[in-house]
Length: 240
Length: 147
Image (cartoon, rainbow over all chains, first blue to last red):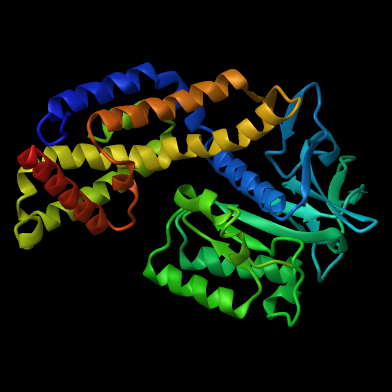
């Protein structure tokens, strides 16, 4: 078997050949790397609901295409999303897992922010004609329609990133900034999902924030995203 | 060495990869400079270490993202009526997904051919990478001696 320490010239030649043959696919897709990471996180949230006995369905396909909402602008009605449904006796609980939805602040009715992934109550999209100076409409959900949200960051975790997330939690879900006596088990709690691996200092901050607040900070998702949302480790994720 | 991987990449990504590579090469040169006996015998393998470092950065920053994307897109395209995913003006079809998967699979196969474990590319600190290289090289030499 070839050995990279002895066959370095052959390995270099084969790597060059690999890069040459796959040049187009690598170049075209490397422009969308951040979108790809968000997609992977979106997929993990859907897996969380599937592993929690929800029936998950894709909604709002258009001409057999899944329309992925890449930006904060645009009418959510024109984009695809997932619907999570669970039966409890005669009752059916439905929620929507959506992407890039504007959410009203908990503290003010006229300020908004846009988490990457939101779990929201069904049919809760509102329209506002006064938000822009032009005739363009602004689409958002009221804060009471928000069930949970996740922020996705394609970085290594660093102190400012972690502390900034607490600011967003304070704006949208301030009740999570204290540990609840009884928390629900139906939905994933508000989470920060980070691609990179944390160093020792960031680990300390993550552990500290997670012990103080009812949130999840999930790092190293490039390597172990699949494991964290798997059937066996899902119990470690905080819920609401 | 990193130029081999970055010459066809978008500017921002190329810059990030080059920055990481240069920073880690400085660390590696420091560890191999003779101050540490533990790494001393790796000095003659600097060319291989440079190539493995460049491969690891390419894998982490480019290919692992492709791999993540295929998991989501496969769910949509193979488990529903959807035939593709529309990302702004770009359409990610089953054919494109197959190309992405093939790019990752061919890379993994190439690493297999040279007995390079993908686990070698999972590290945070450069010291951790170098330690893995040392253990990996020792294991390859043991296998040759045994066999």
